[in-house]
Every structure is written in C-alpha cells, then in structure tokens.
Image 1: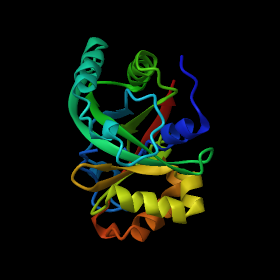
Image 2 (image 1 turned 135 degrees about the vertical axis):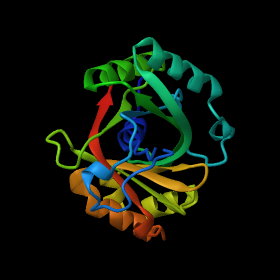
Image 3 (image 1 turned 90 degrees about the vertical axis):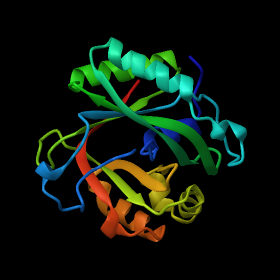
Image 4 (image 1 turned 135 degrees about the horizontal axis):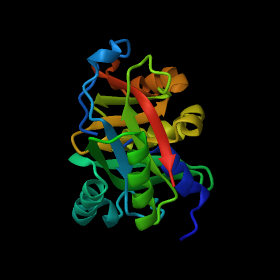
Length: 225
C-alpha cells in the first residue's frame, strides 16, 4: 500500500468533508425534528486518487470519475446493498505538512438497504481496492439516537475558491474541520462532529453563505480503512 502523507491524512479526515464531500435533501434547519430528515440509509465518500494535488488548475481535478462510479456501484451491489445516486465533489483541504491547501475530486454514493456492519464492510473493500488510507461513511440517524455523533451540513452558494481562502484565514477551522467539499452546482458539504456544529456554522457564514438555507442531517460517521 502506498504511504500516505500528513497532508493526505488531513484530506481523508476532512472528507467531509470533505471532505466536504452530496445531492442531499435534509432537514430545513439545525433544529429540525430528527424525524423530518429525508436521507438515504447511508452515504460513502470516496475517491480513487492517491496523489497530493496542490494546484487548483491541475487537469486531474476535471475528471468525472466515470469508471470509479461504475465500479463502486458494482461493489455496493455485490455486497448485498442497493446503490443510489452518486454526485461529484470538489474537495479543498488543509495540509499541515505542506502548509497549504490541497485539492481532490471525489464522489459521494447513496447506499440503501444497508446496516452498520454492511456499510463498514463495503467501505473497507473500497479502501483496499483503491489504496485509500480511509473511506468516510455517514449513516443518517435521528438526532437523539445514542449512535449519533456527527452532522452533515449542506448549504448553497459557495465556490471552491471561497473554501480555500477561508481555510487559509481560519486556523481553528482548518485544524478541526480540515476542509470541505463543494458540489458542481455550488453547495458546500461538511461532515463534522456534533460538538463542532457551532464552528461549522461560523465557518459557513464566514464564506458568505446563508445559514438559513442550510440543511443539517444527524448521524454516525466512520473512517474505514
């Protein structure tokens, strides 16, 4: 397995971000009822990239990952789950080692008819097959569930360049959130610990986005290696 640098690890831990990383339909506000969440059973955030990309104009960021999309959907189906829609994400993450932003094109996959153990197994297969240190998963759960430890935030009106500038200017956000992802139609995607929701909200509004349009889902996240 290829060695992964600190910068790479930061990207993986952020995929949430990025990673940032959704085509979501969710609760209309942070304080919506847990039962109001309209979610797939689970989501997987992944890429087949193993390189560190620091140039936002790098042509590798233009790929639509068609083969990766097809192969991951096959993996999901082969292990007893049902693949749903998939969406491209442009991730911007802070590398503490490089002291600069790094970039990554990835995909989010909706997964239906899957439980916790099945999701973990599928993510592990993807991580191994594509030489990833970790693959991020998110299971949508009621806000009050004892398993809930994370939030998935989505808000429109954000550019990838905005995220990059915000990370450079905000040491706390880049340390705790790591970064974020943006869909091709300009929606910021953050997957973060529940305790960091206030920070994620501040980071989002500092980007100039309207928190009143934010959709927040509650659930359980896991980094599967």
